[in-house]
Image 1 (tube, rainbow, N blue to C red):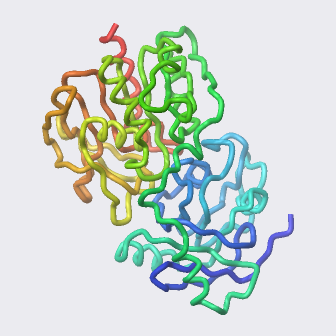
Image 2: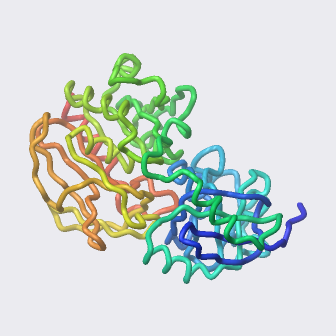
Length: 378
């Protein structure tokens, strides 16, 4: 495949411009600019539905060394709106590669830019916060003011209702590995492929259900699965828009069905418990974010992608319609709440990704904790 080396620019809504070369498809890409601090796992990042409508800036200087393969995708497509890298690999070097990263970006129509000073760009986003941005290539790039106007006309992430755009259209089942011990209904808000895979390794039969089938907290389709537990997945967008998922969660809590949520699911559980959410300055995006368990003091290095967070203080106990709950985890970098635990109903959640493709695996034991919760409920 012939790859273009035309000029490209990355434009932020505050007027800052970074120039480089086209990387991937030619055209225009608009979204929220976020920086991802993972040193590896770019394919998992690109195919994570949580990154829908975001332009990802890779802080690692070299990207694409291991190419692209048919096994490491976390969904059936690339979800990022655009891609920004510093030094792309000229030739992939990995026995599992079926092609290069840039070839896949071109094939899926993802507009990117390379040769950018991503260190300067990351510092800019840390100072100014996540902003709307655009990648432009394949045309006249001289009129910066016009490009800034295009960027500023794009939608903001606050108020963005995106989970329904990435959820599965039809339910599907991931069978348990070996003997089936439990059956779980997984509410798809943007689920990653490794999540049901890791639950199935615990003996769980996972029924992944489309978000659109559950409005106003109606449990009929969920209960039809006869689940031992309910799982709320990760996903994109503003949790304040996810009223149907929140109503469903309250219905689950009322029936005391064991519930486990991650990332977006953590925010949905928080809303169901009466907590509010807020937009973070630049969020947590990467696979090296520390989290402290307030009960044990244990630190886990975690994979995360979220630009919203729950209000609260680390270790705080608060009363809800379903009894007492506690803010069970936090990030020591900024004090962000990273988990909730209900003390009177069988429910807990974390803001990070225990399935952690492509790593780390410090939090993988949370799936065993979910199993224990379902065992106790029996």
